[in-house]
Image 1 (tube, one colour):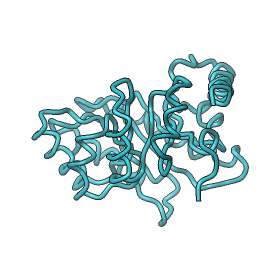
Image 2: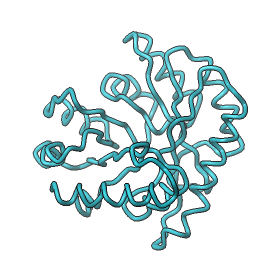
Image 3: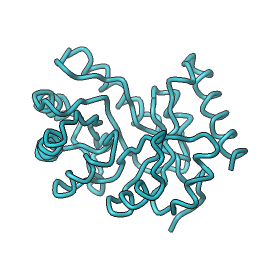
Image 4: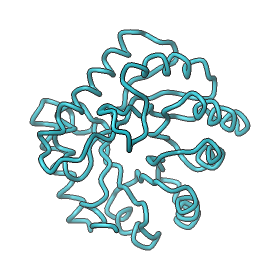
Length: 227
């Protein structure tokens, strides 16, 4: 596993350097959904400390079992409002906030815990009906509304582009998210940071890094194929 992680980190580093970026500004999120605690541990031993999970019940059990304070857990799946209280309790960063209703629910539970919850706003760049996310045109107004919620802190944007076998075909979607981030920064909305761009997975993370990704969500290259 150490060799595998080393190779992925090398690829991240090369992609960053190829476009004049500091590799330290790109973080590896190991997507550990459906992977047992036992199989996550070798990845931790290999020096990975950020893990992405999609399913609440499974994640809560895993986080409790592993119980390692060095780890940062990110929720990257579709989130229903009725699960917000669990996510706030267990996760450092939520990648998938796409409605004001969900944001308000997260804010409500974060307030109860006296926590400022870090979130990313998920944008449906390609407007695919099968995927969650706010439309590009509605993103800025959603962020303006979220900025008024005291227990939420918007750190950036996330997207899941259409799947292509050729990474180059995904580039325009990554570029569009980076352009949107720049647009939001120009708006200078109070309490809004645009530090993070969560985009890129096993098949296309190098292209995502070239377009500005700061968080790459890699599962298959670490844990293998999952049904």
